[in-house]
Length: 260
Ligand SMILES: [Zn+2]
Image (tube, rainbow, N blue to C red; front, side, top):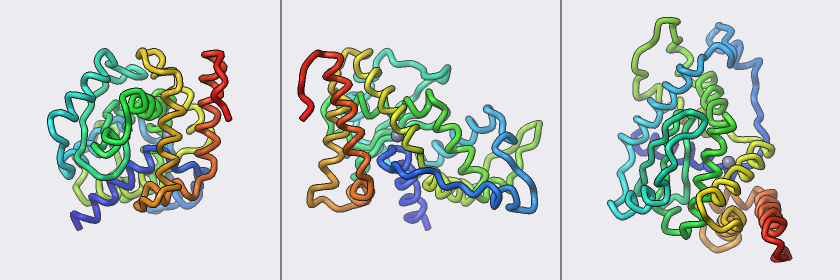
């Protein structure tokens, strides 16, 4: 059971990391009828969504080992001075994981896997994290958690106006599973790419950072490496287009012509 939950959390993070570009396919009618109680996305307040994120992150933190100090230090160095997004104070941790991934939650928690840090140089890493922060800034993460809540067993733990308690581990596991399916739309991905592009530049990095990171992630899918990431990329031809778009954008900015 523990292993399954861990897998689901990793999968949730994968979805978070936005290699998945498929359109959101959401059955609102089904959700509205679930549990015999009409719940709409509007029934959760911002504070409640932030708390769901906080509880999910705490759960993930408890399940996942941290990477060695050198990883934490590198991330802290790169994110030095980056304190908040959309008014939410940020906190960073590196998980020890072979899955290439990073995830920013709607409460400002950012979790980066060691495998991603091994793969990316500083410029590329900044861009990927910037992309994730873009989902927070654009409120995509918030909406994703909102949907995950409404589709999971967590909705049974109805939030009262005056507050609610800590969700049980099994409920959080279910919430994480629902989060797996809360994919971002193509438009959301594109906007997050734009955010990551600018984030890299604002923090003094190469304008080609976003393009390079996407190109590198793409190359994983065409290589012999298997695993969830490669499989996910293989089914998303648009990810190559995203990389091209970011390279063109950098070309326009620098006046160079690196686009093939
Ligand atoms: Zn994304």
